[in-house]
Length: 202
Image: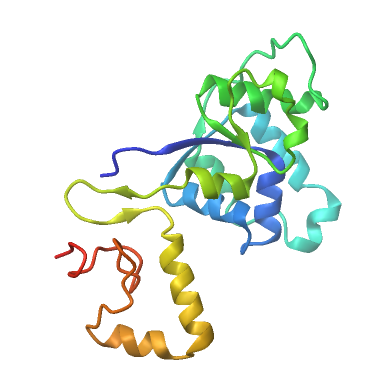
């Protein structure tokens, strides 16, 4: 089993972006929550805001609510709504609960608008964009008994994408062989999930 997980609170605008484009960085984070690679936290107040926002008429053209929304809140950890005890007010008071929730759960707050959370009010909470989260926090976690990587092996995916671009069909041919020449130390880029024989695998 994985030895560690990241703890996140997702701002409503991240969920909206994920619902609009499944190819987006916000959706990568949502997908990591759905697959159990990240621990997300929400409370009644944050779920209520998300439900209200995604119900707005302007999002109907994107097929809202997203099919994964119910599963997201079912798999995310529901915790008590924190007391909004900040003396100073946020630019948008509705955002205060997200910051307090992240502080309460020692989680990273991922948002599409950093300016909604002034630095002097964060009190140690790490507030980042979805792109920053992927870059800084999605790390590889190796299981204890097998060399299975839990996370997004970005370098392997980038290698595969480049090979596909330059040599269409090359990856299929390589996958059918037992050739490990495409390995990216220390991971095997053949599937991006296991160490190859050349680099310490079975």
